[in-house]
Image 1: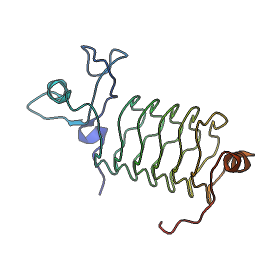
Image 2: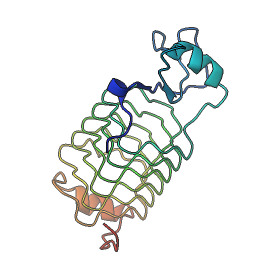
Image 3: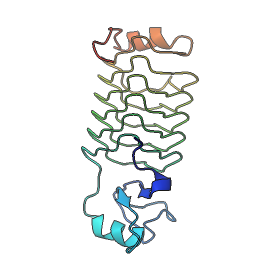
Image 4: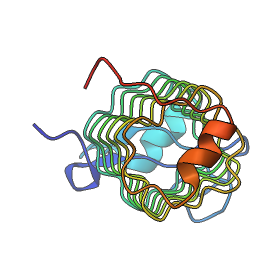
Length: 189
């Protein structure tokens, strides 16, 4: 069973501290949350009513397809995003602490300064992702595809589990361990 996606009427726009008049993304500073298109009411009207929520804390969004979505500064703290596709999405400065991104696709995503502290990225595809300034303390990166990631400026890796990472760039594993990462076989898959 597939989760909601853009073709099925889900709409997700980045959350920011400032709100512009064009809530559908025409201006750089937009606010947004998960909303579903309603045949009777427009997405713009629903977003205006829901602006007060301001984040997706603990949201259940398993299996969403939001390729190229602008999710910078969003709050996905403890959200369930398993088996989702965020290819080429912008998660810069996003809060993904304790988020479940198991087996999700983040190919080519902008993850600059994103906070993945305690996040579950087991088996995720991060190939080509930009990780400059990202915080990965305590994150589970087991079996994650790290092909062509931009990693040299990762901010924090303390206690991140890199056991079984796939296609890690040359020198990444040694560098990660020197910066506090661990290689521990996970009990769950």
